[in-house]
Amino acid sequence: MEKQELLARQNTIIEQLKPFCAEKLNEEYFLLSEKLIKKLGRKRQPPFETGQLNIWAASVIHSIATVNFLFDRSNEHYISVDDISIFFGANKSTVTGKSKQIRDLLKIRQFDEEFSCQKLNESNPFTNLIMVNGFIVSANLLKK
Image (cartoon, helix red, strand yellow):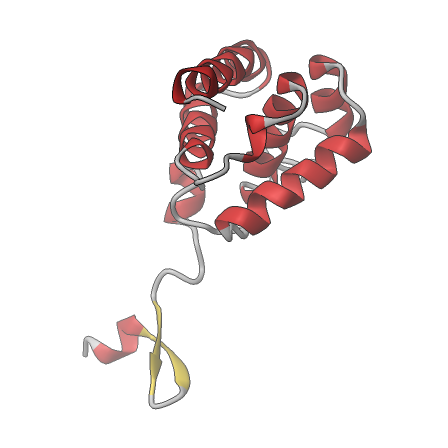
């Protein structure tokens, strides 16, 4: 696939993310989703090179939601997999599978600093942990 064609697919996915984030989430989650799709676009063979763009858009949202615990009902921006699937007109299991593919490809996990919202990064319990002689220690203990 030519670079222009790939860029057009990427931009189409980004445009599909905007209304979902505006309606269900917020601008910060849109920016994280946009960053994620652009990072995927820099891969030698971007996964969204093939397949339906609405499924990739839904999968990007699912990936960001997983990293930021948005499937937890206590979260301020709670969404369900059904919300994502219905909005994008995609099958739940397909979206979940593609989301896993994205997270595995980019090695993204919960509390990933690059794709976590600011509030989550600030409350991350792992931020101050470092390895010293094979032991995990709070960096705060070493500052004294």
